[in-house]
Length: 215
Image 1 (cartoon, rainbow, N blue to C red):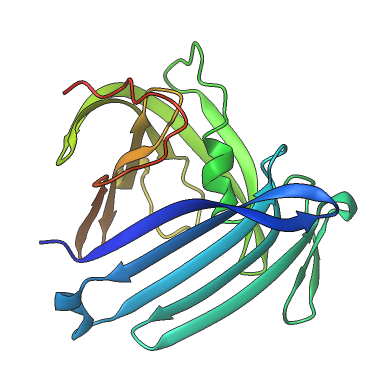
Image 2: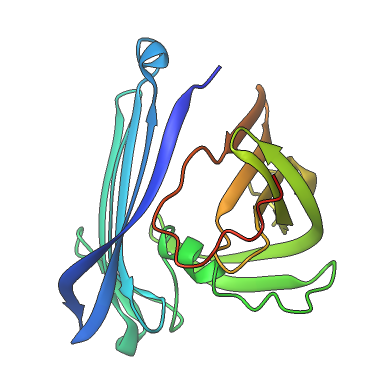
């Protein structure tokens, strides 16, 4: 049974970051009608990230989960190594620090040529007024079957840090297409009350051929 739907979309924009051209990314996650009676979720995240450097200049989130609401607006001052929040707080950050949406697009630019099992990538993400050190590890290359077909995929897992929600690396795995698009095909996560699975159901406007599709 499908509980929810998530979309990610890239848009053009005239908005500038210190005079630099930007790309507008919008992510929306929501529960489907049958689940709204029990626990309604509607989360919207937006980022304006640098077209050339793939790092954020502006970020905002509007979260509504079962009546629990969060609103955040961040302005990244990349040249000054800081971020200013809508609450008037200023935080020091390493240059090139990502937000939670731009991090996804940045990760798609990583060099995966001649990648070997166990290779770890690391980058910084600012969220919830804190800088997190994100590490992901390449685990394998596998053929993954979902509703839209079978795809050759790179399999990754996060490198867990002490005190985080997930305790073991096998608690979360994700697969992206083994082609130049690197779109997410499947995510699996174990949680205390069961498991969550996200799978690719639609795509459009890809820049490169979807050569990873096996059937």
